[in-house]
Image (tube, rainbow, N blue to C red):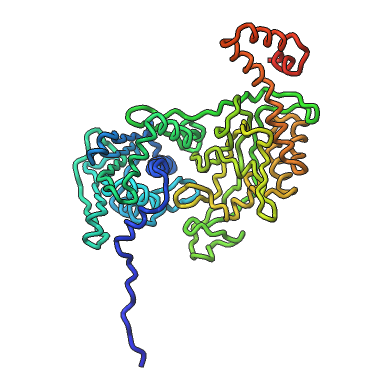
Length: 473
């Protein structure tokens, strides 16, 4: 006779939450994880037909002196729609993610637990919905959870904080003690300095802060310690400018593209690929499906200055730059023997090609530090593949060059990249070096007026290509 046994209880020990805080993550990524959740709440409210008026994320960071005393609070507050008790419970549960992974940035989940846990040992979560007299308060105290060996955390109704009509407020405190792996984590964040943090947040969320996604119901402002973050803008030459090249003729300063590689059906529950014509996901049995457009859009341009690090392409998903100033995916070639060949820059250590590529359909890792490069969506986007074959390069550069404003001969020049991609990129960059020489002459005027005047005079009088170019504008 078969012996009946009790099923195993595989509920993990609460120490798992502590282990999660050891996940590699930068302090700035942790802060952005919290911002993502607020932005997603604005997006979700807009989708429901209840857009938030003047959506705002307000962040207050502690002072280094407070950290020295073991005091201070990191606070993030938004005026989003707030959550019900059921929504709050799901949002705070490790591993939860929203039911629409394609239009959102994060929707809490594992990233929220990791980021708050790395910043501090105690997280207070307050949320209130419009029209509610009370707010919900949940306190996640990692020390108490570990001591009690229970995942159960207290939740209670409280009076809404003053001026808190609706939204969510997160307060992180109880910094990790010396000797712990996270002891210096929040200090590292503050050592960047408020101006640097504002600048980096303005870069990562530039698409949203500029209002580029307003038609899709996505817009917001972000302030840090009372100062609003400004959307980052690349310092590039205008769309109307071009240079003449002896081989490629006219080369525009900016090339814009918007291409649809195809469509696919994905499951909203498990994100699995669903065969066309099927109404149910074979992986999980869900009938919640979504047809996704595999659209690649953006621009490439020439920066007005050379720099050893500040160049490259921002790769963006739903308004959030996942990869900032990405270089390897665009400027390096990996051959069949796994040898990395540098395509750009090859004649100097400085670069000036910049741009933005939007890949809203490509999934990211759970910490949003990179795209899932092994996913089919990523591999099928040749524009960002770092494994160019001749065919791949031709498709990628041809896609980029199909922008309606691009001159016909320039398009032909760029689409010839598969034969020698570095030649096309080098030409794109070096052809725009002319203004730099004139600018160098101008800047030297303050140090040596005589030499500068002579240089400027000869530059404008000589029938050189530089002078002809400058005179056009």
